[in-house]
Length: 487
Image 1 (tube, rainbow, N blue to C red):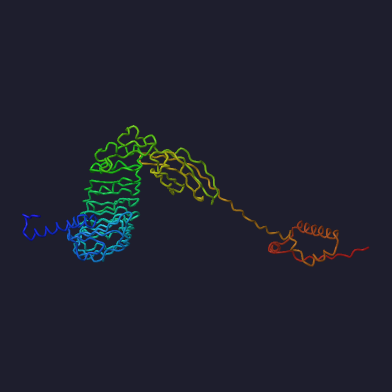
Image 2 (cartoon, helix red, strand yellow):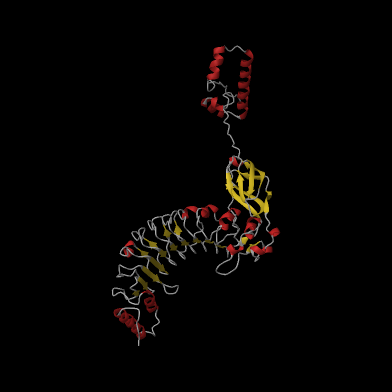
């Protein structure tokens, strides 16, 4: 028997009916029934068959849905479409029409549902919404329009949308955002513009994003930040300009990064240890290299072991000799830790940068050959400079490149003098000569030579005749009368 002392008789009967209802289903253990217990005991008559719609306004739907559920009460304030890793929904797109009727919605959770696209105006008009979680889907892009006008949102969780591209200013209109979870997106780069306007942000989670570098400007604008998670990235170093940012935090996660314990991160050792401890594992970040310090925690590494090797160019080929148009291959052996950025400067001032060396790469070396290949041009001939520099120091060295330019061969055409040319002889003369033997021909040649010589010795040619002679292109006709041979 049940009693009721604090309510009216009607209320007492309602409570008694609820108790009797629970008694009749006390062996039930389904997730839907548990949701009923939490969110109001009674479901809406318009609720789809695969969902539980509590009178409190919260809706939870079972996995393996192939589309957004239709027929949900317009008074719904919370929607949870929660698949699991092994039992997913299959909802490719979330559209504005899916949510437009829920003007009072506050919480929207969609996980493991294969969502790949969001309408730009998905949340338009939903001014009451406070929490948005779209975890472990396949969302490819978050642009600058999706969250426009959502001033009341204080949590956004996009964890697990691997490969998702986030536009600059994507969260800028979320003026009251406090928690931004962007884990396991593999974004590769976190720009300052991505977090513009988040002056009230208290927690930023960037774990699992393949970050090799982070800029201090990215976090300086987050004036209210207290928790920062950079774990599970590819960070091997972080400049001491971060010290002022880190000192303002309550918790920072730096685990599971390939930290290279050089003088560049020595400042981390002296950071407040309570900030560095992981709330998840209770451990602190450890050195991944150099080999001597591998697996040592940063805190237990002696100050003297945080060493750096200044950049030094050990050798370069000198000189290089190459033919114009052939491939010029330049190799320089360089050392440094952190390994320096390398640049070649051509004789005309043109700069060529070598690919940067990733210090998170397990093949990272403090000494290595750095190469460049290019087609040799005439302008490459001369003195080159190679420069190696990191944040600590700089070194440079010069070497010569000789570019051989093929010489051009000129062809000279010689004009035959009229005196020496046989073309000057009349064709009839040649025919006539052809009828005689070699002796006669020789005699004729001797005769012509004597005649020419005698004319030259006289020296009585008039000036105008000399001019005319120089302008002629061939000899005048000469007739030879030859007496027949006698026997």
